[in-house]
Amino acid sequence: MVTIDDVRAIAAGLERAYEVVVRDRVKFRVGRIVFLAFGHDERMMGFAFPKDERAALVASEPDKFLLPKPGDMRYQWVVVRLDAIDLQELRELVEEAWAMVVPKKLSSAYFAAVTPDAPDAPDAPGAPPTR
Image: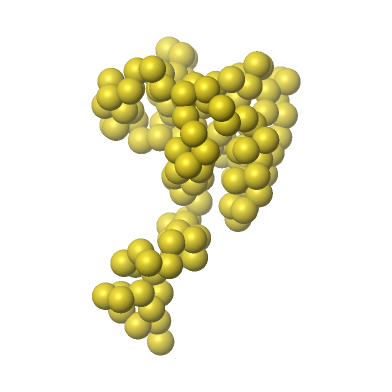
């Protein structure tokens, strides 16, 4: 099972991301925008996710994902049970949530650096030259 400490380790490598505690709950932000939030028991994590795709995500794996509580349905948000995912899936959720709240230029540079074989990575085969 993944834990909040795994999230901290991943978030530490994300530019502009920082941790705060609000009403005894851990949240991760970029500026004033929250992209990850934990419940009091830290077994569930809310994360930024496109509104128009969340119903399909929850329907595809209802044992892992939940819709946010009714008061949070207006936000681009989904909830995941941490005991239902592994470290690789956690990394993907955290990185993609972060990418929703930072400038595209910043997220593109990050993903190019961590996945140098990606087609949009600088100097990758098939990518335009960076000169």
